[in-house]
Length: 368
Image 1 (tube, rainbow, N blue to C red):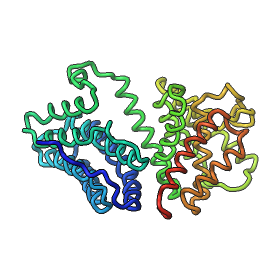
Image 2: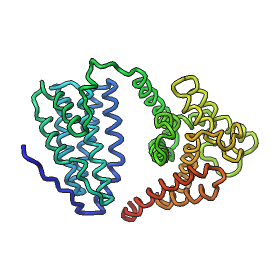
Image 3: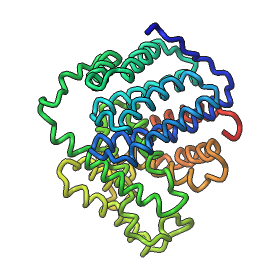
Image 4: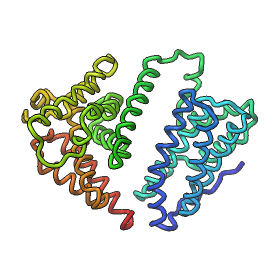
């Protein structure tokens, strides 16, 4: 099969941004379903749901004239159809291919939005290898999947063959994170205003953390994002979106909620870092926070990030009626006006993250 030409032109900028919006919703769902398959959840309903998601992506890409996405997703549909028909059984190498393709499409869309070159993504090579894999005989399919991932990423998957030792700690940590996420999603479903907050907070926390690579462990921070408000589930719903001043009794009750969630994590030795972040995320550098009134360096970096994310989410939620851009601007303005509550170094890094997000909003059409 010869090298395939891909049309990377943005035909309709407004339609392109519409597609970016729907992909921000579709992509995490695809990733979640593929991960479920990796945990052994391979029933027909999960595979059918994944197939429907891919079909929706392909249809929206075609409608929005983001044409280069279509052949990639069509190939993934064909690969998934072989699973649906029972021709092949699911193995992780199939999921690796699906996640690799979705990741590359996401990177390509971001590059196009930012007017950057796409050469390093090797999209024509990926599409050629993907089509060859999809069309391979049953007995060669899994080997072709492994070869595709190795060819595109340079990661030698033969080093991760089934006979290699399994990292039990890593598997356990991913299982824990999946459970923590489930708790967080259950909480966010208690109020319509909370829907989507888990993914919003996680993305924002990780973006802030990566402004200073290596300072905060991503897995511990992810666990802290999921668990930091679980204690709120033990408080009356009237606390969750309370405006105005609290009574002294209410303040005492509110001060207890970080300890409840941190206490759960402390019982799991692998999550001691996350427990500390959760316990301290309402502390303030000047000592006016709770529950212990810690100061300055006594507060861990992860808790400082979580405090910013928590405050930003609360203010944007309160002003959501203004629209995304205006609520973000109000939130970052309020946070900077209350700078004594936050670590100045992390506040500067957080400001940079929000500046990038506001710039992205500015490139979207009005109402997008």
